[in-house]
Length: 166
Length: 150
Length: 144
Image (cartoon, rainbow over the protein chains, first blue to last red):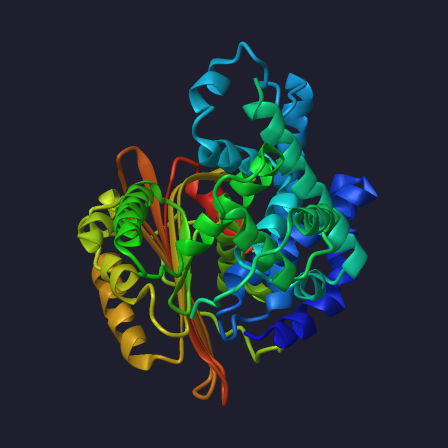
């Protein structure tokens, strides 16, 4: 499926997807992130099938499931008051062990990024999509993608420095 | 084909591109120049994080396309292949949830569950939504449900 | 080597069921949608094993499928069939409850629909569940 075709099928219902996400997640920004995550996920997984029934209808099922999953994770982490990078610290054995292996460190850092940031980094830095393409697929403004990309890259850098410094 | 770049960018040029990189403003070409720059040896320490980050991404890219230019690359590619295959085997062993759509395999759990939900919708129809089914007796029922409404 | 691993995998209590072959042989065919879930829970229902396959416009495979289904039907504890339609368009749905195995209920759902001048669609579902089978059946059929 071409990007054009994907856009034509999905973008008309983008508002509906947001509406569903908003109902479940309540916070607008979270709902928006969820919609983008789902669109990127659909693009990455479904762009090579010719026609699977209605991609648009399927998307509404996916956004619902995605948001419910997000909600579960959110509730769990609020209960545990978990911060993603709480393991950093100079007395951390993980640090000592991993000091040499920068690739392992980076892999973990990226794995722990918020989902949308992780997806955008993957599409830009690994799969070499242009920012414009990502904006098209997610139906967002160029600036929004750049901002998420910038946040993600800075986070990776900051965490890397933190985890590899003495 | 690998593009031969005659001269590489200067340290200050690199600094500028790196700053734009973190703002999400670099073009694919700028990133390529930066990548070439960072693959040099004996760079000042300040470039270490970027060297590691770009190196990591370059490695990930190599998983799908690997080029054979030297013996060293052969060796690392071989290691890479073995690693990828063993990861594949491992994930085959642990993959319980999947969907095949027109021959393409999907393993993302959210998508697979959504495909399953879709199949429920496919097997039910307008008539069944309003009925309650039970399998209480060994019965075969033939019903004329009339013309299709669709 | 890879295929050996995928074959040996997770299809235990389907032993002795002919429809297993349909899932195995046609899962990655053209125009086919096939789904497998293992040990999932949806809306409180236990999907110990869930397999579905949707096949469009492939009368040969559908014929095969229906033969296998008839054979498996002889093992069933309970059978329910609903048929409708005239010659040009037809729809039939079959539900089978098979004997329990490994402490799980086993259900087969099958629907075949032939729409005039359009698609012929067959969808086959196999479920192993600890949940009450009637409730499970109704859950699936009423999912909107």
